[in-house]
Length: 175
Length: 178
Image (tube, rainbow over all chains, first blue to last red; front, side, top):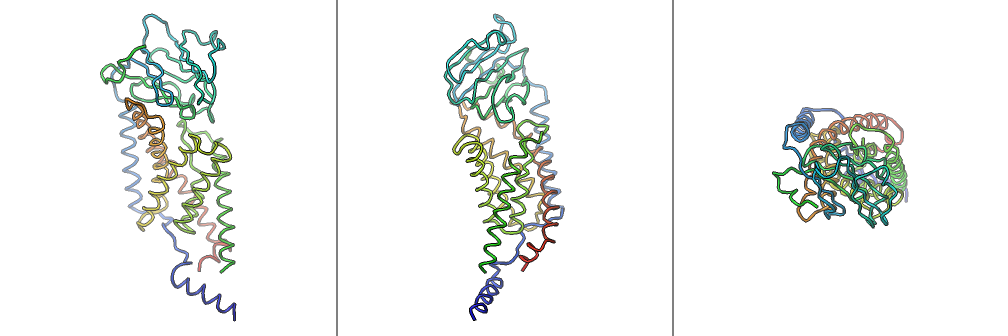
């Protein structure tokens, strides 16, 4: 008797579509999918080419940010110091540990939210993260950035750097 | 009735465990764009959405982000917020789009992959917000994410559709097909 009651409850719920095996999408391509995919691909492709490949003003400054605060703004080409130059961010106290390898440096200490010490290289009109600790080294794997307004981001360390050009009004402070 | 619920909980737990495993494993798979992942764990989410529904899709996805945060990145760390923001945006958009019956797994997967990236960029801009608004330049990653989202989305959709078509033939899912 109890079993019969249970079965009838399940059947009722099936009829009420509560337990119906209802799929929310199909597994086959259709024309709408193709249109959507082409639109996104074309938009993404167009802006990627525009941002990464089209000619742009030459960069003039490098701004480096940590936790949303600007740490330093340096000229991309420095007449007083020869390239390569390095910005060294220490997690704890400043040391001379990197001085022999990374010369012409600017040092910042006690940046406690870094995973570990981080070094950014400024060389020949480009910037690159050359030393960092992050999952799979995604920060240093970005390689060199030479174009203005493309961020060199190291999210796990809360650091990003940006080359700006004179015309855009973001790089007018030089330390 | 009780059996159906137990079976459902057990199967969803299995999918959750697989999603966590795939999330971990894909860290070792190199991609041609730094920071871009294949999104293998999304295969499990799409399977759950197909067989179970929107509520389960959200719940298992959210639990995955939470458990990965607890196990690997640390809960309430920046990485956790990146994952959470990517998940929430992609989940929201996929749930809305799943009401449009004309869309297939391919559209949903592509949109999901792109929204995951967009959510992470928005999170990155907010968390690194500068007084002069310079962090907005992180949007320059967006077009690249659209392109990679299309490619990885199609791959993941194809993989998921293969798994789903095989799972449909198994006794477990046949018996669910009431």
